[in-house]
Image (cartoon, rainbow, N blue to C red; front, side, top):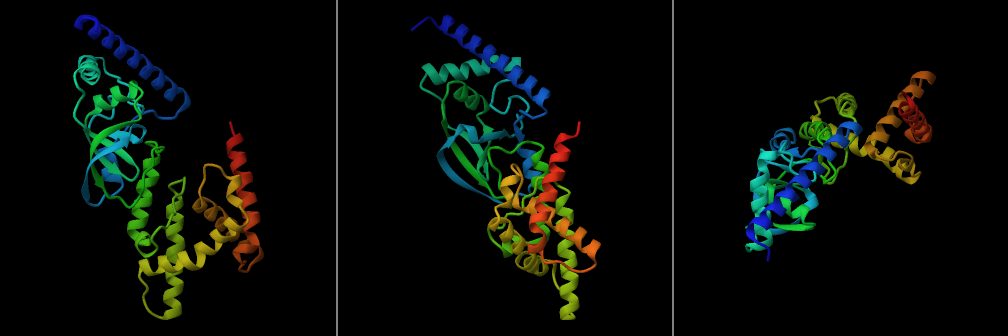
Length: 293
């Protein structure tokens, strides 16, 4: 084995190379507009209305599912490359211990959905990824959330996830209809969904001549208004023309088209009569927006 001084110098060079790669990732993020930041656990906790936690003990977790940190989310890129020069000695010592001194204890993480946030062990994660490891041992605390997170979630998407959490909290649809998936790609759509549910509640109250709770109206709307349109979308395979969008997105576009048609002709139209045309209209609008300078 080379001398300690030579080994330490080599590890410091590894750190500088990792920082250079971090700078390139940051530059690419600025040029593309696609963030390379880690997620802030504090922001996720506040936005997604997390609800309780449970210890899951020691586990082997995938490194690429670690997407954020508690407190140190600005110190590393999304791929855990180090940004701060002041971290070089700590980073180097962690790598030395991993390679030559018997390794290091497991990290501590919070799990939200399918992703993890480092509570203790950011440098261990950084070095392990630099070494090409695929997994790492971690003590896992699972934090419950109404809205699932995946490893692909970006900081900007948290706004939509947070709005979705508030929508579910108001309507209770994740409780009355387990497995419901109403995730959209534009936060303003939840306001329109809530308007639809409120209109449906008013109609039900008039029909029954008694008040109807929002949760009951939401469940009825889901069964009698939303699902029939989604069934048409699936049967006609309409979503394939809208990569990057969701069934709920297409439902809203079909609904908007249905409203336009009904306003023009002056009477109600069944969704199956306009679903195909609504999807085509949405596709034209999407292509137009993409082509705009």
